[in-house]
Image 1: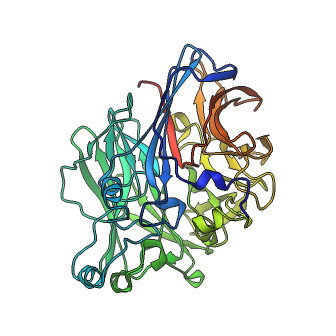
Image 2: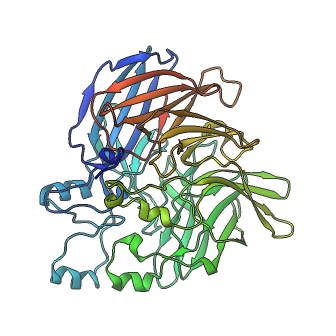
Image 3: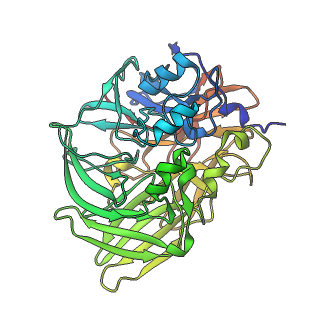
Length: 468
């Protein structure tokens, strides 16, 4: 027996190019540009079934807006991983939780030859200067054409940094530089924190942090002066990983006795201070900012990484309860005495958080938007807005409707932090279709929806881009 949300985790092999979607209500005429997203859309190959939501072959999506009208496109990202999987009917490059089907010879060979990194950009859309790229959690983002979603080329870096893991959620400064880290697995592994100049495509190393047991970190934090690396105790021994021959995430182990280490790295000189706090897990940083000697770091918190196992396709396609959302917490670091304190912001469950990044990233802010839970044990089934200063929240919910990540778009003359609209792609299980929802960000009342008459698989991340 399947749950109501299970159809959102099956193949969608059709690509689309649809003009003038049917609209109920309205989208503001000032909305000019496109909501661009990526996500897994091909899970069942001819000869192999992928195991985890994070493993599916990437599809790009575009909802473009012109004078109140909405067009829709979707197209597979023609990555190296996708082309090899389509040609052979099975994975040829290791994904997050699924290995290629190997012969005995190939298994022995893998002990001596480093595996290829996947370029299956199914997690996020990022921007390098004027280029838009689809990325996974490896340093192989792919440039694509935002007009027609055609795959173009891999990003080429003009430096000598090497590594295997790069979080899919970089940060940007006002000059357009990109901040992230590159993890290089070794006997003594390295987090290489860097700043990328998109004009020269050169990554400048800010700091290097050594570790024998790297943590799984899906995102990072950044303030005006510091870079925040939260090492949750979900860790791996790279030497054991080399010989275990398991998919990536299966090598990580939960070691709560290690606690969580928060590295505070000076963005100018690379100086690193480490602060320790309780064990917890998070996929997503929300925002971080400074206040005198205090650094505030907001995350969607889980007690442990059990959510990773919740997202295996076997569970998502069954009638098992899905505990896939966490709670917004603020960790505050006192730089004077080294104390780290924790505060729960709200009792409202939420994941896939978004803020008004263009104006409030690294600064004090008030609102976070996300996909939330209204029915306990259900998949993400509402769109939520939380006031992080009061803990109060507003919700859009419709029975058997399941949102992907909501995105805030400010109005052209926005003065208030929530002056604009929230866009979210919604899977309607009863109607067996998908619609793009528009909410007034202040009142959280629905203003319009644009209908796609097919089920689009649940996707991860993206953003609104005004010039497409």
